[in-house]
Image (cartoon, rainbow, N blue to C red; front, top):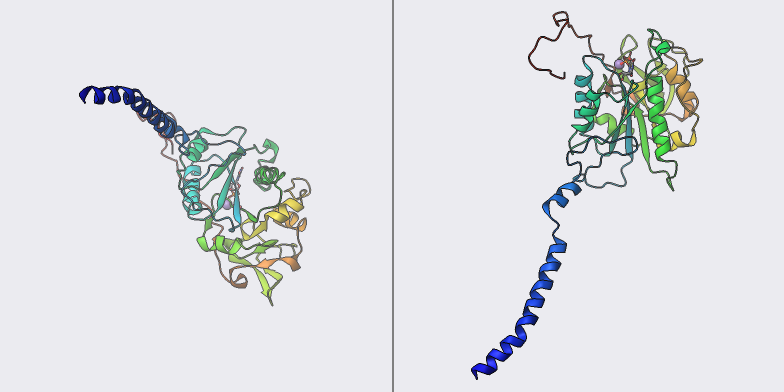
Length: 314
Ligand code: UDP
Ligand code: MN
């Protein structure tokens, strides 16, 4: 009896071992080593993206029906730059489906802005970091600012959708780095079909400027400066649908022939008419964005040479 059991045991033993080995190999394949897991985690200490590679937020719930908002922000180096960008990021990260196109007025991506963009956490906002310098001859008081940077943002968006089978719903607006934006503004602009408009606070030497609306249509402009402009509106006062940007590929900001203060008008003239404008913010009776300007910072006591024992980015 004993020898019968022993012989059965010896026959089954190699098979049992084989099954154990196979199970082990299989589970090993399903559980990759910790290093591989780390590498697949989104933005695990990745240096920030380059053109065309927006960061993705894995935790963000997919809302495919919500039109994406592209915010184009020109920015340039100055003592308050990082503070301005921090304020802006804190606003934008609260807006769903917003893609920030940050365009540096610079021949290179600066270290400060690159670090800042890299430091935007998974909570966003997703950001594409571009750069283009303003030619020195245009860096004069009285000349329009940020023309090349806004155009670089437009070009990036057009390029991105060049081969898209059907245009996704989307909205674009120009978000200067020093303005103040309410979250309600984004809800308003998100439904832009062609071009939408709204009041802007603290601009044009007045408490506010606004499009004058009658029976749901824009019929004029309440402004302290050249109300005869075809679109007497600040850069912060309108949004354009992605569809309009794509179907008017020649609409860009012009240096030549564009007088200061006329850039908005010259741009909008190329894509729409006053009759077509869509008034937002309760028929243009609410201020949801302010053309704030940061005071030039006082650095009178800043030493000429570096005196501190550490080097600190501000
Ligand atoms: N800007 C820029 N390069 C410059 C000056 C300004 O990129 O040489 C950017 C600036 O960061 C802002 C936008 O252009 O986002 C508008 O500039 P600013 O706020 O100085 O103009 P204003 O308040 O007079 O409209
Ligand atoms: Mn400004």
